[in-house]
Image (cartoon, rainbow, N blue to C red; front, side, top):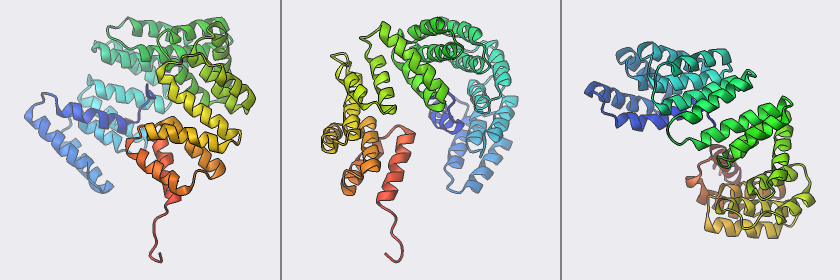
Length: 360
């Protein structure tokens, strides 16, 4: 599950195709055509002027306000535009969710909670209520109201429709909050609820741990206890293996890698392969590590884990050769889905292949 506080620009890009296919009135369809033309203006000033004109002539079309917010240069400015759109279309779910996302980004938690409660009282369909409840949980956790957050998660789980990943992520965040508050038994219960819904909760724990050292310690304790209770849970064991590598305990990491439960689920095998290669590289066994990476990238040129280890190997040891690295990055680049990895690939290619100058 992607981060829930998506930038508004990403929200727009995902919404416009669906909006264009709706059974809209002809004028609204024309407005969406004008909007598409505005958003593809190569010059920012021309785009802003076109959007401003549309906001004046088509104030009732929610996509105009969403697109304008996506083009804003700061979250505060985006929020003003979304609020203005809601003045015309107060029940539009996309505008409501965009406002909640922006309030979360701006850390305006009480306002976020107020808007979430109001949206829940408005009778939206279950899929919209689910998104609103997520932002309610987020705001409650951010303001230390863990008990209320758990009640909101139970409401989320009672909605019709499958949303296992959302529930798993929410329970994992509750587990982390309870662990940080010194309630380990309640934290363990919440983590079990997350794990019962799949591995997404552990990804959320990892993301939260990367943002704060104290969260990293709490997350490690949580997972360590869970792994003792469920020694055959491969996702838990891999989480601890990654922590050992991060701590520089290469011997312990190697022992953990060798002791992973077998057979591993198919979805974890690329991660096992990348971790094996990374350990070999960190142990200065470069040829062995690179051989594993080459074999994996021959099968899947855009494998994100193998590419990440390949980039790390380049920056640590300047291996493989620059021409081989460039060739592999070019092969992967069109297929990358992770924005952070795509940026790193682009930056590395720029370093490997600086633009030619006139003198050249």
